[in-house]
Image (cartoon, rainbow, N blue to C red; front, side, top):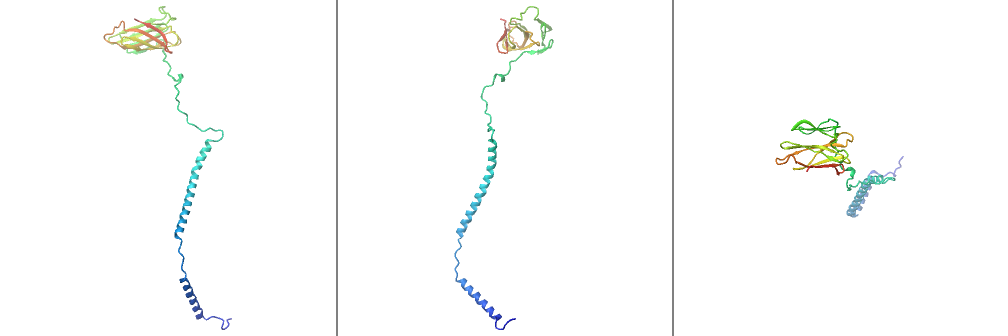
Length: 242
């Protein structure tokens, strides 16, 4: 219940509020605001951005260093040695890596070897058999008729020629070691032939070669020397024809 004289009249309250607002506005006009420290704010903002960038870079470097640390630890774990690439070898090749010396071709009894068209050779236990283009009938050189001494080094020679070709062959026997190569000295130079033998160690074999014959070469004295060498390069047997 309202008592008379204690309640403010509406008009009076409105007038007081207006006067209060005017007083506050006048007081606000009398206040001069200070200048904002914009430069300092900008400097502080730049310092904050730089610190954040350094933190990101440091974190990235840490991630990169982790795999490197793992690799280092893995390579130096206890009981293991660091892996070092092998150095290139500068030493000379050993004797075992050198190419082996040639050896005679091993043929079975009666097996024919074609040295050139019409020039065929084969061996039997009795000796050498051959044919040449100028004489297609088989010829024979015995190793059991007593004409050779298998205990003494020796070489024989058969030389047959046509207008421009020489067909050369012969026995070799009695040498020490293993026969390997044959060199034939002719009027046109040195000729390198080939060797054939029967299986086992028969103590003899056959050499053969072909070479060009010049028109002024003497078919009779065409060959001057035949030398068979062993696998060590030493003379196995030699024939001096003239």
